[in-house]
Length: 453
Image (cartoon, rainbow, N blue to C red; front, side):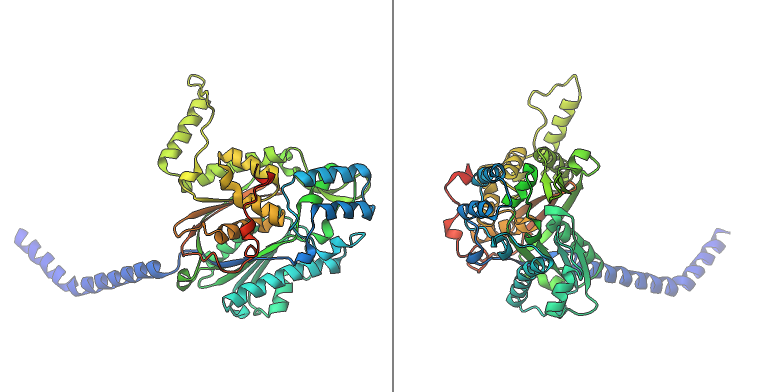
């Protein structure tokens, strides 16, 4: 019986052998082909280059000019003028920062046409500069994302750019508004998600804030602050998911973490556009803003930390939390603040104001030199809203501090309230002599005055 069974199985194996081997070979080929496909296809999001807007010197707003202007314009009473003067002198903003032409007029002139002119001036300049620098045909752009928080015209800002440069008709466009100063990184995140879906594409991201329509003429101090802090600026960024672009790209996006704590009423109302009692519309910056920003940053760090920090630092942080939570293991030193300098070489903190930079430095236990790019951007260009982190990265490049392999943390805050982080890895040798928004003045920085103290 055993002999008969063995012969039967041997016969069956002999009959099935050709079919089996054919299927096995076909399966092997498919597995190898799939492995090669996933190996060679582009997985990364590459930042080919970016450019920042450099306003003409004729639009500079030295402190003396700003004060004289608000006095002569008659828009503010003496108390409001004195308050703005006091804040401006302590703001850390230098004499080279700029405002659009209409704000220089007496009284300041604001209209839809004037705002559109400011937007076109900034965006058309930087898009032309970026595309021409790399000889990129506008019709090769597959994705266009723009963000401008307080100006949302019809047609949209993306339509302005398409009309000017002749982008092709099937380009994928998104226009973001109302997202605050963190919208620049939000736009990068949106472009990243689109690039993950659409292969072999180029994405153009545009970040700016329109200053023309947002001057506040009332007396509420919390609404007067934006008059002092915000300045003219913008940035254009080219992203790619094409593998061949890795060799020419400056950076690769490693992580992007978004945090929104708007479910908390204090956070939601910390940056709020509304009319005052006299009907003057403005953006109010509450006294709780720094506390809210710290809370949002802490939440953002808790998600970002495991992605970038060494395990030893993560374990130390976890142990400090346990010690703090358990009553029988009191922690006299409080919760350990992770040392992000063990994982990241450079920091671009949103230049929202001197107090914001100081607060974030304290929260992250950073040294003054770690916040240098942010302080110098605030001094030279003011708060340019969503584009400020790009002026800071440009500063680091022009100073020659970025080396291949370095990682940069961009931190942005915005209304809502949001804290967004982007981690970039430098994958090329950056030439600090290439012309950019800092080229003509970089030798003056860092300043040695009280803006560093």
